[in-house]
Image (tube, rainbow, N blue to C red; front, top):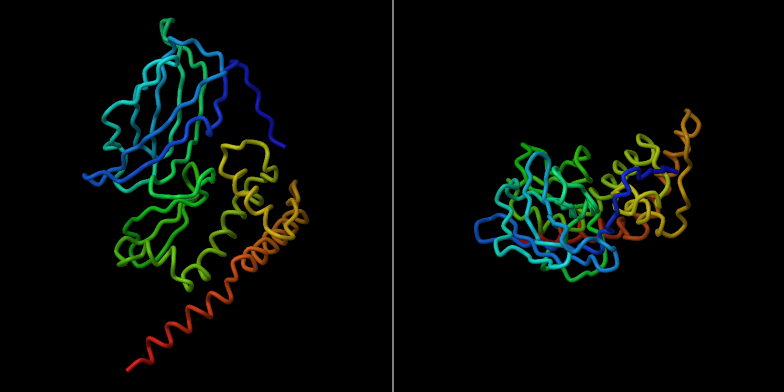
Length: 264
């Protein structure tokens, strides 16, 4: 289990207090909306509140007024964030009475939801971004703050295909899950889903542990444990495929293709 010590006495704000939604603007960049809840945290009312959007090397900061009087700016366009990229957010509460300002409270790695989505209270485990990736159809990017499924924007309707086509879903998503779990459990040796609710690896572990028959992964190092971890991942993939009926979905998608191809 990973333990973190707070030597600065900085307060941690849970992400549920800062729900963020994003929507595409007319200029092609996202805009955001949020409802910040700082009640009960005993923060100075005059402390300044900022929300920051970030994606890799792009970054924007917005002032939200004071802790006792949250005011959203009229212009919340994310024009300095890479176009089409899905940013993450952090909220900072800062005491500006001193010379440099003291960070009093922080909520980090806030994953936004699309304003059009109807689901509530769920974390977007696998955001999607669209780039020109040559002749590849998809890639899994594990180099940032969370896993991102990258789809080739040169392929017509690839967004709809990835979310609705049974062939794509049955062939791609088991491998995506396998790669993500290998990073979490084998490479990073993170096997505790409770160590940080804002961390994407904990969120993924919580997700797979809800699958029927899936137990907690083995922890530790050494060749034997490493093989046990790989066996655990394969058990998760079997449970994942069973839960979403990937074999049946593949057959259904293949049958539909055969009907279309054989039509005169």
